[in-house]
Amino acid sequence: MNFEELLQFIESEDKNIRENYGSPTKQEEILARTVKLGEEYGELCDEILSANNDQRKEKLEKKDKDNLPEEFADVIITTLLLAKSMEVDIKMALEKKIAKINERHKKI
Image 1 (cartoon, rainbow, N blue to C red):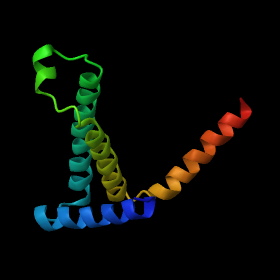
Image 2: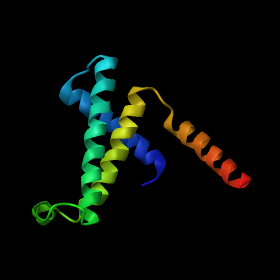
Image 3: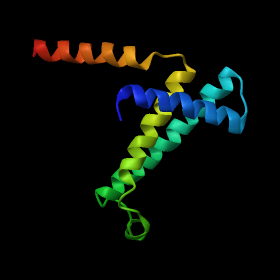
Image 4: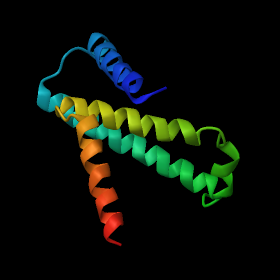
């Protein structure tokens, strides 16, 4: 999947969410997606702890070892949905940020 296909998926997912859950106000949508991002980040952290065997034994026994990549994907997708809600041009934002990082590394 390339970046353009990912952004097309985000457009489609946003449409699906609106069709299934209605159209909240902009403020409600941003709040809901911010909270969702926090939830997904927490799940990613939990999976990282499990992958490093830094969980209780009982919790480790119940974990699906193949879930870690999906949790990374959930965080990315939710972040992109939130950026869309906030009308952030994520492609431009990434290009600018990457240019800043590259410039910083040239100075080192």
